[in-house]
Figure 1 (cartoon, rainbow, N blue to C red):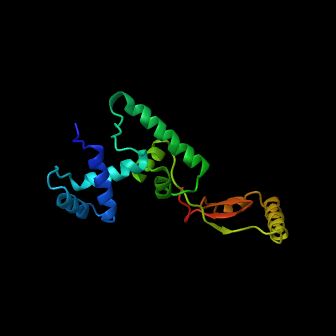
Figure 2 (figure 1 turned 90 degrees about the horizontal axis):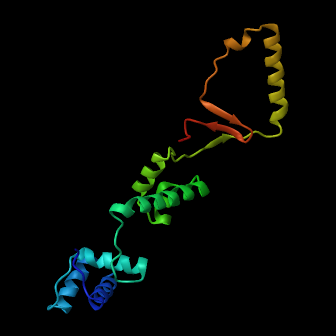
Length: 177
């Protein structure tokens, strides 16, 4: 069972934490100087109390889900993460972590467990209307060569290094999928 303090003690901790500009060690020293007859909390209690007050609006401790409720919490968190990436597929794990208030490591693990991977696509070319006649001429030339020599297509080195789309050619070397 964690050691708990009264609401007035917690209020004094939050006040001194702010008074010392978020410096937990300085807040602990100031607390010891101002309240010599009270038990001296660990320096982490100052920041944790401030964080709890900011998140919940209360000094009361929120019990973490353990045992029976842990899978329910994990399922809810997983659903939140996957929904976030469905709506924002190109966002970074770090940015998502700060927006959702979830550790980037947990986000990485959740995404990889779902078979997803962060990606960044870099477009290197874009087809313009002026390219249509040249592309048509190349296709006509290729069909003519294939009509003259049915084995012509076998003399071409076909690679899978790039994906061609109507919006442009994707440089797969710089694309992380």
